[in-house]
Structure formats: structure tokens, C-alpha cells
Image (cartoon, rainbow, N blue to C red):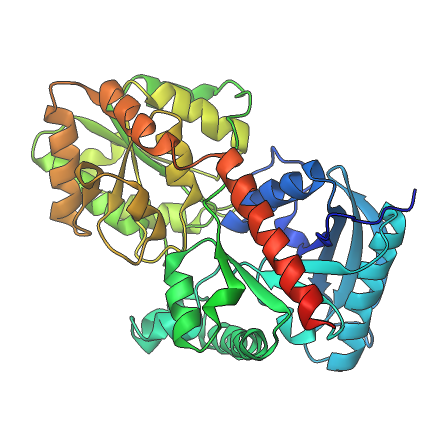
Length: 424
């Protein structure tokens, strides 16, 4: 079937790191971009606009880019193997080849727009194609303006990784600023403010409310994790993909220890990192005084179904804590809140999701501040379940998959129209 989009909206191809696009939606997410990507794909597919996915992977052994077709998680994909030291024109040509293959496979004719989930490949974007980008990760240039060079190196892995990311982010920002057919699908005011401060035209930026899909059917929690959660008088917990510097889970530990010293009978649960990599979890455990370690449990990152099963258990006795020091959105805290779990957020404008939470669900980002919030929830006469229910009701009107789709398709229509005009 040869499809021509008569409504003027371009077909869309998502571009994402292969590591962040697992075989199944039910696998634990590597990063926040994973669930966002799937929501964007559903949105484009429901609108008849999806021409598949380009999955890219660095391969330092290659001398030139390689493109092939594949199926992944129910989608027709093109795989792109390359590395950053390759000739830029060759990588750009390979991206264009991958896009052309996908359009042919899906029967689309006419112009296509690539949708990058990070700015990693923007420097290689084919000049002849329109594109938009969502910046899921922090900008190194922005981060280093708020934190020290040492903290920046730690946050991004090491100084070399931070420098590599900085280089390619700068290249991406420069291209977005200068190319009238490049657009930003913004999920974070933090990033909008940064991009505008760097000279990106606001008229090429459109905001989308975050996508929170309906809860998937949970799989039963078993063993120690289930009993630990169920038997807690008060369960204070968090769940992240990676236990890194940005997530600041050390704050969760210190705040909970402080609250226990004040007499709050809580248990501490942390889920994050690969189940096979226990180093960060052990480091967190070492921060818990010996007399409280029996009330501490750290496990590997949870699948989506396990996460929602935990939310179900925790509605009656749990507090989900977002402890991040810098977060361009924060999908999991929103998922917890929309599942009816009492959720608290650091009261800092460096955590985007905080703006969706009432003041009563924010805490000063310090050990005492978190302990105060935990103590207040524990002492509230309405109870944890009722607090979670009211929180869900206050957020639900703003955050939904439907609102995300409405925002995304509105932005896509605008981008398509402007791109066509700019290409004439």
C-alpha cells in the first residue's frame, strides 16, 4: 500500500539508542526515555503516522556505517551501526538510507520527519529531512553552571564522558538554533529555558504534557520483596532505573534514618540498577546504621508490572519518595502518584515533575526536610491511603496518555506545516 498523507502531517520515524528500546514493554526501563518513546510510538501509530524506528548502536570495530532492517517489540525497525569518529557525511547518509528503507517498508511517500529521543545524533542529521528532538538527559553546559566540575564528572560517569556528551550536545544545540526545519518537542521547562537562553527560536518549540500510560496488569510480587512491603507499618520507598548521582538516593536514606530516630516506625525500600550489579545498593546499605538495617531492603530495578504491583501494595502503607537533585522530568514519581500512592517531591525547580505536585507533597531537599515530610504524613489523621487518593485526583486532570497524544499531534501538525513551508 502506498500511503500519502493528505492532511499534510509528515510520517514520523523515531530515532533511539538500541539499548533503550527493549524487546518487550514489560522489561525494566533503562532510562526515562524508554517509556516516553513507547508513548510517542503509540501516538504516531494510532494517528497512522508511524514509519517505524531507527535503532542506533555504537560499534567501534566498524570502518563505515551499516544499516539493516529488523523487527523489535512489534515494530519494524532499521538498525544503524556506527561510531562517532566516522566521517559525518557517511553517517548522515546512513541515517537517510535507514529512513528511506522504513518509509518504503511502511508504504509512505512524501516527506518524513525524524524524531530523536536525545540529541546524540543531531550532528549527523541529514540536511534534506525535517526533525524534532526531545532532550531527555540534562545538558552538561547547564548542569555545570549549577554544580561543580567534580560533581558534573561524577554525574555523567567521568570527565571524559561528560566532555564527549558536552561536545555533541553543543553541536546539536547549534544545529537546532540555525536550522529552521529542526524542532523541539519539549517535556521539560528546565530544557525550554536553557534552549531559549542559547538562542533557539521559541516558535520552533512545543510543550507536551508527560505521558503516563494506564497501569499494566501487575504480576504478583513474591518472596522477600512482598513480605517486606506488606508487613511494614510505613513503607518509604523509591524505584529508579539507575542509582546515579542525579537520583540522590543517599538523601532518601539519610531522611528515613532521621525519621526513624524520631520514632517513625518505617521500613526503607530501594529498587534500582541491574540485579547483577549490587555495588550501589551495598553502598546505600552501608549508610544505614546497624540498628536499622533489618528495616532496609535494596533490590534490582523492577519491571513495569512489578512496579505497578508494588504501587498496589503501597497504597495503604507507603510513601514514594523522589529524592533527585536534578531531573528533567520524573516519570516514575508521576506513575506512583497516579496509582494512588502518597508521593513526595523535593521542593526545587531543578526537578521538573515537582510543578505537578501540591505544596503539601513537597519537602525541602535535606535530611531534616525529608524527615519532616515523612513525619507529617505518618501523623496525618486522614491516613496514607486517603492522602494518596487526593494526590491522584489533583494530578489526574493534567497528566494522562490522552493529553500527551493531544499535545504531541498538535505539535506534529505545527512542525509539519512549518517544515514544508521552510523547504519550499
